[in-house]
Length: 477
Image (cartoon, rainbow, N blue to C red; front, side, top):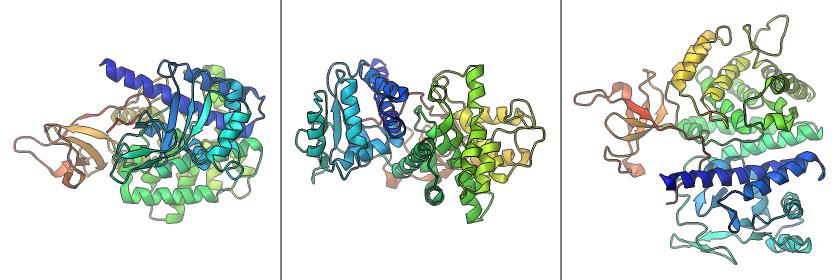
């Protein structure tokens, strides 16, 4: 038990460090070096390095196959929002960054300067490390990349610490990380553009949604499962992406119109773009908001509509969704209007997915809620949703989310692949034997629980393998 708690603590600490790096890189792009947010984010990196797992020696944060690794373990959750950091390390010809708890603010500024410089100016690790050395950086450096040995093991190049990457550590990571990372990077770029006052381009968002639609058609379960790697991200991009995934997956059960499906996806992805103008200390608050903070946060729907309207090429459906996804005829909705407008299909879908994600997601101040409980709450929210759409959403998703791991009454571990004609009996893929032995992929079979019976009893789901509020870190192979 102690070992599990230690692993969770290390996972939380390293993900906090990665998140601090990502925020610092964004703030460095948006604000001048002396801006309070830049200074504060540098302090967050230093604070993270003071945590117990890192205080006794160097911290080496590596990259392999577009994924961050720490102590030989893939950091799946942390990697989802860190493409900008991963690409910056790789563009310098490096495989890792190494730093210690003694690192100074000056050294962190130098490191961020190296990482945020155009890759053509610092195209090699030697050039990057020479600049760090010239700026008197003692406690931070870039390390050479890693390569897999032909025999299936790994070899380190240069001064790469032995054992940083354990053999086949990433072989069991089957989720489409690249698509998720690209979507996060898209939202990061849009946030930077908004804060710089530049014009937005929506072609990349449309292309991203097209890729998302294609992936959902091929394997909805793995993509939706990937969105369940939880960590608190400072700019709430994870929330926007999960809402978008839910909205597109739901909408494709409602329409075969490819153009409409893409428009709904873009609208859902950008529904919270107004949060890019919300003060960082409110957006990044790790406790429940007080009344004044809540008032400020509620401005994001109007701000989002204004941002999108200022860009002439924006689809009106996106503007309407950003403005109206919190509108309701009942109490608690915003912004306050004299008359309730007619909501578009995209707005109605996004409203449902927005609330469902908020209820079922892990937050710094709460654990996840089961889908069944979330559905009960949403059904009780009078005048908040389109009733027919909400019931259809429940039918499509079932009470066991796609991609979630469950234990069957017969003892096997399984993964939910899709819903069936009976909402509480989905189609699952069997992952283990009743004794708990893991099945090879070729031995895994799909089972429709709505049509399967055992000798004496129906095969049912006994329990859902609960999601933890700690950030995800993959176990070593």
